[in-house]
Amino acid sequence: MQFKKFENVNEFYNATYDLLMDYEAQNIIPLGNIIIGNEGKDKTDWRDPTNWFMATVSNETGIQITAIMTPPHNLAIYATNNIIDSAAIDCLIDGIAGHPIPGVIAEKALANFFAKAYTIRKGMTFKVSMDQRIYELTKVNQAIPQIGSLRLLEERDMYFFPFWAEGFYAAAAYGCTTMQIPTDAEKYRYHITEKNVYVLEDKGMPVSIAGFSRAMQTVIGIGRVFTPPYFRGKGYASSCVAQVSQIALDKGYTKCVLYTDLANPTSNSIYQKIGYNPICDSLMLKFM
Image (cartoon, rainbow, N blue to C red; front, side, top):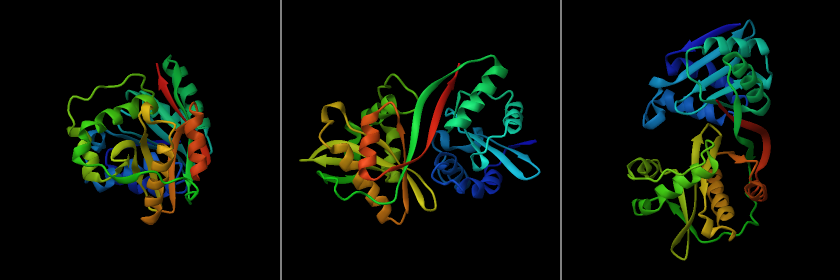
């Protein structure tokens, strides 16, 4: 096995893009990252590849493991064709020595295999931050009621959007258990510029949000789905996600992809009613 660390994101993109595209929907996170890095247009926050960790493990037949970490986020890994090679995992662990790894995100079997091998080697333990399921949609169920009106996020939404965005992360992303109280709206204005977040209004009142996360050739991610507790149970989230998904399909994407927390049966049920079908399970694990 041969470990190769990449310092240049363009070289990493060229080496791994086609491989990751074989499982485009499953690999939406690493694909989205390397596309951002390769384009070099957006270097805000974690998107600057200067501090990224990028590596592959190969044998005589080609790349067996692809790994990318965009601090402060977890190491995202993919086993080619979802075939786990223990020698390749050992080689990757050897190669990342000296790099602080907060956790891993990967297809469920691979995440468990890597975490066990890594923590044994390091004398650490790990825990599940989120037990996830990846869904994809090719057609929106037209029976979902269209409630209210949908529009892009605007400057006037900065009085509530930072709090809703942090509420989303606290409730559903990265294993957060507490909410950060925003003191400055500047970093949230990024989504206005990118035009990737939509607000659902009912009778002029913002009630739910959803947006696009990563755009591939034919697949786009749906994320940042959040409805404040006092607006839940009224069909707002279903309508918002259905409408945003339809906008994506109308733009020419053939599939929408989203991650769900398996600990939340309500959201999983909602997405399936909209037309999302499961493609695989994923684990986000934290090292301790």
